[in-house]
Length: 279
Length: 335
Image (cartoon, rainbow over all chains, first blue to last red; front, side, top):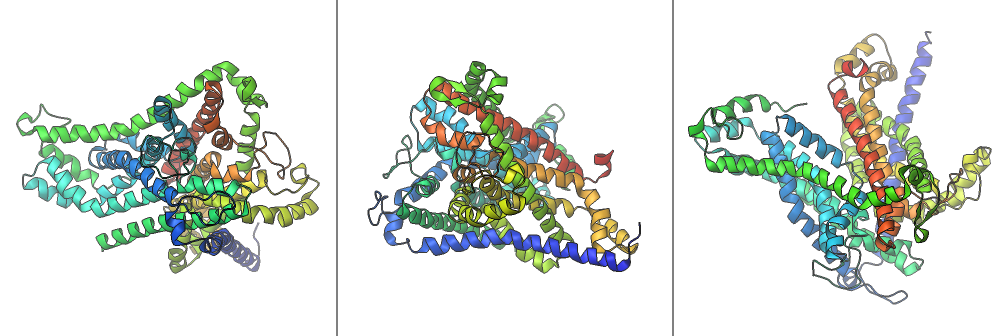
């Protein structure tokens, strides 16, 4: 079934146009979302918004200070657990992962990164909330750390593998022991990249809502006790967005802008850092 | 795709007296810190397996009593969910999850594959490098922000324009009947489509980039147009990987919580119309877990989580294998 050259060219052009159209369609929601978060969120931003406690419905002012602090606090706890485990597993995969065990761990990490975050929330509930009999920042941190480990392990492995073999050989040839070589030569070289990976993982964790709903719950006040319910930006946005009050909707947009700024800053810092390292 | 560094590494570590594996061969050169370091690293690596085991164990521990109370068959087929009477039928949630994910795939699949083809095969490299960033950005936006945008932008558009339009043009199908209220399966499906688009696109791009240039060139040299080269040479080679990418996108859609919770309408019913409000597995967990009325209710919600976990793990395992196979070339996949 030969078609005319002209017909085939027309098909070619049509398909190219359709694929280009896909690009435009994909970018429309992104543009609309960013524009609305900025335009609707900007009005509510003030010094108070960053530092004050939430105000009751209908009352002027108020902020999400405790939610910003809570997000940082919970993510901090998540880093304490997730970073050593994730980076360590990544170093293991890169340095000693050429085995069936290594393959199994690598594959498990890949599959774990596809597990829905709400499921991880249930796990943290069972591990921390049930025994402690209280929703807590720790429980939220545990949930987020479980989400950090697989991605951190995979990216650390890739970064450690980027370290030239000759560096490793030079160090070993000088009689430096294995562990010193790993720690002081290989990890030291990959450090910039690993910090970037950690910052990106932190940015992702800070945007999670579902695993926090029934682990760290929420709190209308400042809280620095790890065993108590703690506010977070994302849960606060959710509560504001689904409430039937206009002024809470405005606050949801402003809080979303703050969240995007936080995440954007973290990702940008990560990218700038790694650019400097590898130039 | 194995790293090239793996080859010399084995000789070298052996020469330096590999502490973990062959201590008898060179006992004099093994020292304690090296062995401790190896043990520590292995323990951290095993930590990943431990995390997986803990996830399965905890879900099972909390969820199993509720499943045995109801019976697995009743649990997934009954459509009444009444925690106050200890009746747990998850059918509306399973239905809602499947319908919204299907809508998401129908919308996202052509767009993301078109986009991936455009960026790898058609557009100049400058366009590719400019567009990669917004696509990564799309993947990095938190789902609660998508939910917020969906609630105040997407839902009004659906209610006032898209749904009335669909009703006028395709209203003879049961899918597009009933009152256009905005919140419902369609809204959730559309937001999911936007959210899984970067996943499918980026993995498809990765897969398409492994297609050897010689295949493309051979097709073009035989007089094929660019599109014919894509259809006859590139896509068949990358098919398994693209299927894998789609399954990974589906996995994300099934487990996505916040945006769906905010847009699906949260009504535990089974309706044919996409305009109708429904419910999904993650949404009911999100809404009820913190205020569950007793251990059995918590257990039933954890059992929903277990179900979700099992399905997404299965999807991910198959998908990852497909993507891996596809990176090595098509021969083994098609055999």
